[in-house]
Image (cartoon, rainbow, N blue to C red; front, top):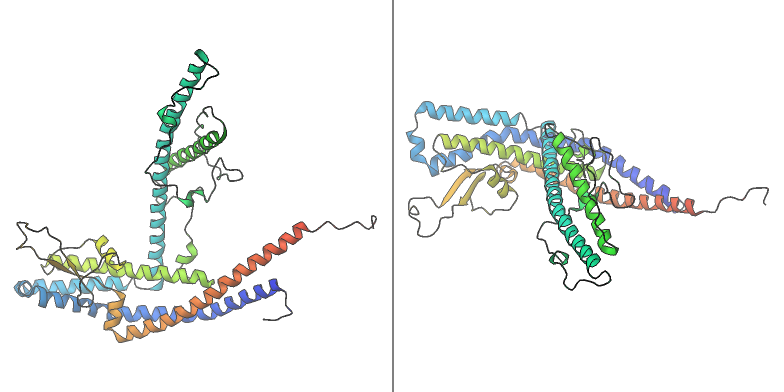
Length: 408
């Protein structure tokens, strides 16, 4: 670092230097990723055949021996066709296409969850406002007819504190702003606007809370109205959405930003895991058809095992062994199997069985460590740069205006 350089210029220079290093790393990283996928494609069929061989010879040898020769040959051809179809999708471009689909699917799932939350808020809020307006009117009528300057002896039960068990508001709902907060107004929407409910009488903190609730209800009704109009669209992207997916981390080209490149790599790994999971499910279906599988595990259960949410029993490579819980004393307990064995292709098992693939993974992990160090440094300099820019703008805004020459 040059001691005579300005801090702002030095921070910008360090960021540019890290981006230049990133550009040198990107082609090498892409080549390593492509080589890893190539080696994976070359050994995938053998890994599937080895797992199925264990099932056919160790789990159900009688069943496989009783199959006709034509049926066994058709089963082998079917395995080859499934692996060949999967290999065509095991490229960087194809995997990132799947990653973009996964990102949009998760985005729609979050959007649906937000809409359901807003709908519950709207329904609960309408009941709370109507219930709170009636006691206020009853109390005012009672005071006007009988004792106008005296408070009622008994408070209505609706004015007591109500503890709800509903989910709280998600923080990302407020990213685009809410009506009712000064300076935070959501983008304009087309179509008819529902009129806000009439504000019941109140003062102080109760009145402010009621206005806030009314703003939330109005926002929820507008959201639901827009959703009903765009329900037929395949991939709606309304401007009022709280968080939009970042397409830079699922593009087919590698990002220049080290932080974005780490996220891009994470999406690639998730897409690869999804491809292998889909192939595993397809092979399990074929195993079930020929009678070599005891049952078909749902894909959600396979995902739970891959995510570490479900602990599996020890099993050979690329096989999944799960216990089958049965209640004690059940009539079918002696005849039912206590565990199920299915195919589940995992990167760790594939790399353990293939030394060349394991070498490619070691080289990729070295790249990942270098990239993480670079991303950490880049993130620190980026924060430093933003702080210095804000500091410079602050001093410019607070500097006194220059004195005209005539006044001097």
